[in-house]
Image 1 (cartoon, rainbow, N blue to C red):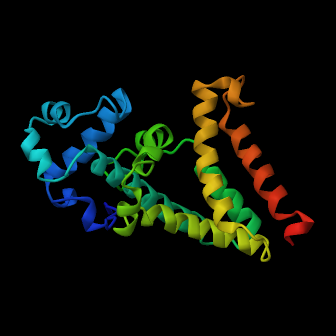
Image 2 (cartoon, helix red, strand yellow):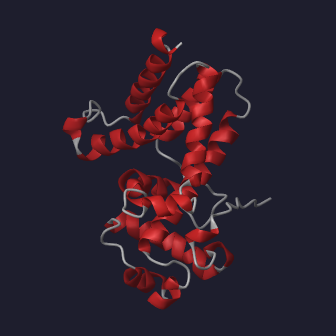
Length: 228
């Protein structure tokens, strides 16, 4: 049986729900391809309209601007990843094994999920690595935060923070460590492939090295006597 994963998005992210029409799904699908190919700075609704055989006006009926579309894509990814974290750790009892699984999910290449036909998660993951911080590193971050546009990201951090406390109940910085794991996984991947002097993983370009580094960072931190 063909099962399609449905992710409910914050209605303030869009003017018209792209999940409810073929054009909307095409906007999501092709914007991912264009941003991945050309970068967010070069991405425009005009170029997107040409690719999908529509008009700029048609795209503006769904999204206020390209930055709001980027926030939508990143929020969608974090919601999808939260689902993956819960699904893949559901039957794991050992909290350390559970946390290691999460680190691996964050630091290694994502495979496309066939349950979401109009979203290529493997490409979207690369966009998150290279463009993800642009969703919130803006002057409007406080206003966007009040609208809960970053809730999926914060929800994922909360889940990881809870796992950290399961490993070390008295650890003082679970939220900070959770967000650090996520961002560090992406930064080290980006550095490995683009700014090799900022990482120790450029020679082999092996994501498994990033996983081991993050495991060392996390478990060394939560096992320190001062934190127990």
